[in-house]
Each structure stands twice: as C-alpha cells, then as structure tokens.
Image (cartoon, rainbow, N blue to C red; front, side, top):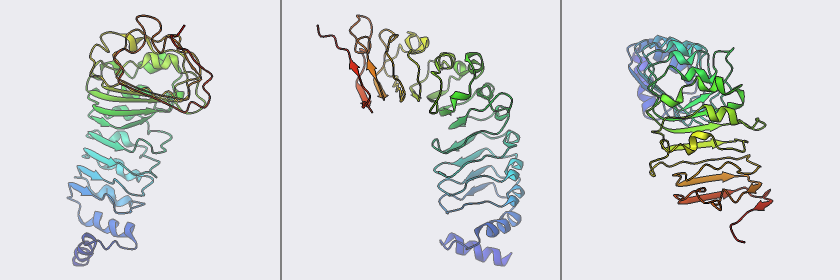
Length: 306
C-alpha cells in the first residue's frame, strides 16, 4: 500500500508510469471506495478489467485520451451516473452490456468518433439525460432508432448518425422525438450512399422547443412538412441550420415563410426561384446568415429578374 501511495504521488506530479495499465490495475484494486475518478488528458490507451472493483464509482472522466474501447467489466459499475469520453478521437466501442448502467445520467461522446454501432438495448437507460451521440443500428440487433423512445428526459444536444439504417418512417417514428421537450439541438446524419431519406426525415419531427437543427448528408428533394408548421417555427429566435451536403435536385417544395435565421447548404446542383423567394409567400424572410459551400457542381441559379 505504501508503494502504491508513492506511485500515486509520482503520478499526480506528472510522472506517468511506463506500464500505466498495470498501475491502474493496482489502483482499482486498492481504492475500491472511489466515487470520482478523473483521468482526462493522461494519454491512456487502455483500462484494465479490474475497473469493475470500483463498485461505488459515480463519476468517470476519460476525456482527451487515446482509449479506443472500454473493457466489458465497465458494465458492472451499476452506480455510475456520469461517463465522459469527449475528445477521445480513437474511441470505437462501448461495452456490450451498457444497458446495465441504469443509473447513468450523462454519456458524453465525441460526435466525430467512428462508432459503427451502439450496444443493444440502450433504451433501458431511462435515467439518461445527456446522450451526445447515438449511432443507429438495426431492430434485430437491439440498437435501432427506437431505443430513443423511453429515455424521456434527454436534454441538450444529440447527434443521431447512420440514418441510412432506418428502414422506413414507421420505424423512425418510434423514437418519439416529438415529445423530447428538453432537447435544444438535434443533428440528423446520413452517411454517403444513402437513399433520399425523405420518409425518415418526415417521421423524426422534434419538439417545438428545439433551437438548432442540423441535417447532414440528406439527399431528399423536399423539406419535411413539419418545417413549415407555424407552431414549430413561430419564434424567430430559433436558430436552424441545414447541412444538406448531397442535395442535388430542385427545391420544389420550400415551405412558406420559415422563421429561419441561419441556413448552411453544401453541394447544390440547382437553386430554384422558390428558394430565393420569387413566389410570394415563400422563401426565407427572417434569414440573417446564408452560407453556400461546395458549389463546384452548380448548374443553375434561378433569380427573380425578368
């Protein structure tokens, strides 16, 4: 124990041990009453399985490390409430039995990490309030978009990726985003090679309290009908952003008079007269910021000039 205390003193002084995994193995075995463990920015690339000895742990911060996965034994930390993995750019895999952490309230993940699947039955984490990223899987695998249905207290921001895997609007609607009244920011992301996604986007209508909406990789021609709902956008302070990276066809169904103050669009092929407001009652009368990027394929820009 005295040797461990000496090692801890050296560690806190900035001298990181060569075999850091073995070092933490000893720490976890000896300090089983820990409630808070802050390991951010320590160049950790692996945690030992003995982390499951920290039965009383409430707070675990692994942010800004080189860790690629959590050991399966992490699923035994039943009292965990906060798990932070922000700025862990190499992170790839959550424990398969993550659903056991029923007291978890906050799961911070780097939105750009290359998680290909979420663990199954994440919807059992009904106490979770912050879920910064959700990777859509399949209904058969237990990680479909419908897993977002039961965590009713989701708040802040959530990035929902791999929407190509949602088979239809009916499956998308199960997520019940319309009743997540505490969410303020939503990102919907389709990967490259996706279908147009129009039916899915129509079915993931958020609550009217939403302030920022990002749509990435959407290939559809039409806005969803709820975008033009006066109840949804009756408040001009809503900041809405569309990142339609792959939109290549006409804006034939721009909804009327959107209270949209920011619009970001990428990779357009055709900009219709309706988009710029040639048709009275359409367009974006509240728009303050318009950012068009990646216009190398632009073929036509219709104007109101006769």
